[in-house]
Image (cartoon, rainbow, N blue to C red; front, top):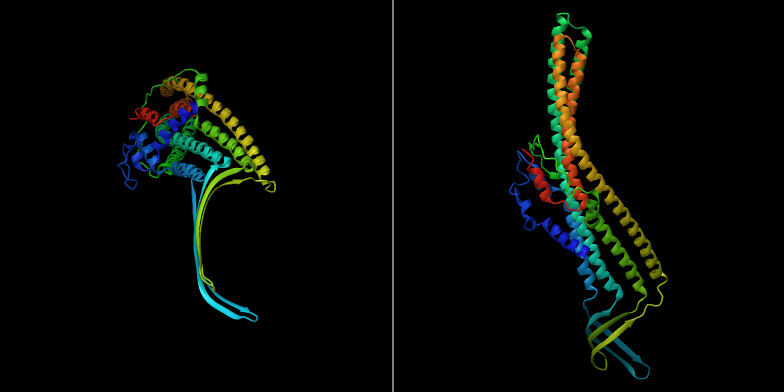
Length: 457
């Protein structure tokens, strides 16, 4: 019952992400009036995701693979449906007969004929199993397509937040460079009036040069990460909506890691795909073993043969109907070997399923712990930033009155900007981990992306 309910949900998910556009859910139709060739000047997370749905090569490949797998069922069913074949022939013959003492006879005549045969399987265990096996393989492909669709949500979000993080780093690098430059100017002024040594000026200059280098590196990372986003979307928005300074830090519901693990074991799409792969492998053993079983079929055939001859033409009409039993006796050991091979592959599928189950549990637990740790880390870094700003201001004031050195100010500034970077990074990681937790549990939907999108501004 659980797998049946899961498969119903997967059918809706697969249908919702298949082309043509008429089969795309309403949430994906927002903004699809923008053609792929037109420049997109500003975009939020949903805009970028909608581009990816149309352009991402992995999703398109998964869709094509699923469509190909859907053809397995009609192919398997065809072996159990009537098989009709026809044959026709025409020939022209020159015949000469020499009989000793009786002379010779010769002539040219035509022969023609046709036949029509219908075969209907009554019992073929291998074909019946193959039909059941096709359903398992289609279900596996549907689960894999759903997993790719969920992975796209995470990949788009990760690439999007990576760009935002890189842009944040540029802003922080510029601000840090300006702050250090002001400190360098103050150090020069105080050195000129003899309040500090030249070493303070040189240290400030070295810190400024390092800040310039960091700005160059940060700008380069923006370009690199935008290229990574381009691979998914096929189009680069000129500007991405930023995450708001204050985002809600929501504890996962339910706040129980064991319940999340239980949900993942039931609904994780990769695990469901592995389960259906094991089922298909088990049926393959039965199908191969059926090579030793007899088959039973009904046949009907009619034929007409019109043959010319020296002594006159002859026409024959023949009609037959009957039951045919085929009993395989020996195939050189092929059936036994193929059955044994299928048994080994079944054992392999079982082990891969067990491994996927353990991996699903690990991913779910790790994602849950990362979300909880992310909430604590963001809160701690917010407070640390307040303290670092106060410390930097105190260091500047102390430097002006001569109670603090230039090094003290530079260290305080470095700590403040490092905390800003860490806080921005922690916010993005928290958002991504909330998506990864739902992905591991198999519950990730586009609506979850819409929630994150409301936190952009």
